[in-house]
Image 1: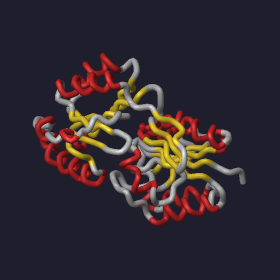
Image 2: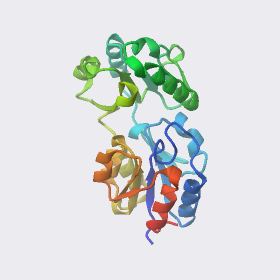
Image 3: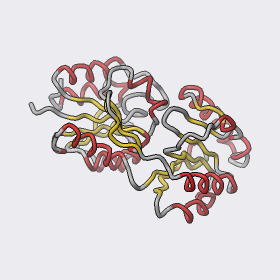
Length: 274
């Protein structure tokens, strides 16, 4: 069998959302595939700091920060932080319009401390949202915004109640930044991120494939949400998790069970990777 490059989203694909611990069945599949000569990369919106605990389990590198920072275990292949003026403009306009912000550098992540204030009018879902955000911050080591040290930023993650809160920032930055927004109806808010149009997960896949001299037809991607779309559209064979977005399932070649139901192992086995 031709050597394959395998790309795995983390949250909702390799692990339960916000977790750093894949099921043993998933890691067994990864190790078996690597023993067959395949390379397995993480392909995630997380920055290197947030994905480090998962990377340490034995992956071959990562397309990190939604494609803004791409590396193998011993070489950086692509590095593209935000322009300082774009970052400052975005942060100012988002704050002025009551948008809760999380910023991601290569080695650290910072978030606004006053989520309750930003979402005070969010209604019944507000307390649930605050509990969810605090749990996520603790799991992923998100530090208070007051501690931000000026490091180059790759991505701004946003949370707000209404799309109109994003309009001023979109007007200023949409030419160069894609505003990827998802509706978290159950939590009474919108959640999304500003992604530099110079990169995406699909371009990250291409960078890794070129580095190894592997044709895109010999790449396989696993994802669960629409922020995996560019990866799914780029790889030679695409897999969406059963817990994933219906729109992404429609774009994928295969749908496999959720990772908690040994879905990755089953898919690896079905694809002849073990």
